[in-house]
Amino acid sequence: MIRKLPEKAIGKIPILIIPTIFLVLYFCISFPSRVSAEYGGLNEITSVEPLLVEKGDTLSAISKRYAPEYSYITAKEYMQDILELNNLHSEHIQAGKYILLPNYRNET
Image 1: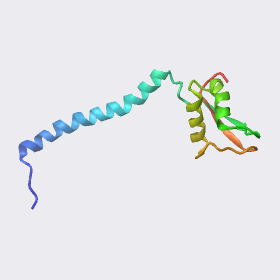
Image 2 (image 1 turned 180 degrees about the horizontal axis):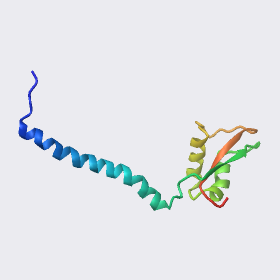
Image 3 (image 1 turned 45 degrees about the vertical axis):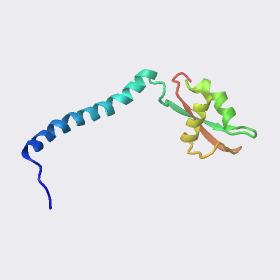
Image 4 (image 1 turned 90 degrees about the horizontal axis):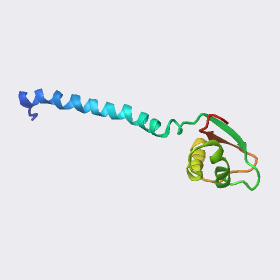
């Protein structure tokens, strides 16, 4: 048996739902802009740079070498970005293959 809500309760539902919707929309819209403003837009990839992996190269060494040149983040964070950008599931890379390096700086 379905129980009906009293008419007083039905009138209060929009009063609760409408502010909740506005709060959710506010946080969804303002949060990304706050993050970008906090970092000055420095967390956006401006371009990608191809790199030919040479014998003996490791992802750790590549990220340590290129993080200061192409980003404003630590080498460890940069390595994670390289993994994600290249859809790699491990740090293993093969010599003779190209990987893409994210470039967060405009000047290079």
